[in-house]
Image 1 (tube, rainbow, N blue to C red):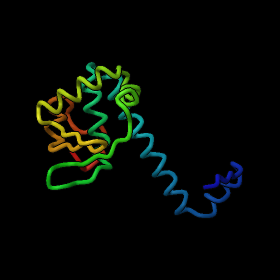
Image 2: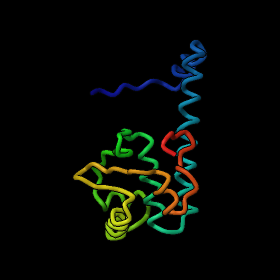
Image 3: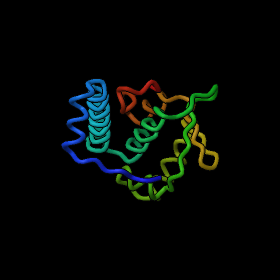
Image 4: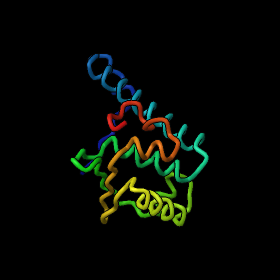
Length: 138
């Protein structure tokens, strides 16, 4: 894979010449902004680490695969890396994941996480809905 760079003015000129591309760029930027705001809201307004972890799992559910057993997520992150995402220690992530498993809110097999019921996970963690308003997993 090779990276290519484009001067700012050339990119702006391209957008002026191609209104559909300009519309698509604006839509993508808006979507990224909305997701960033949702993540900040989740991190800033959620008091417990388990709620933040549940919010992160629900966010991942948006791009997960729907199966007859729930939403399947592939996660290559370590517990430490997940903790870094939500501002918690590795031990807290491990404890929360074990709690979610014992409550039947998730199943873990290697790098595959299965969330049988996203609404139940959101309810357990006192999250009103999934953190991403564009997410169909709610």
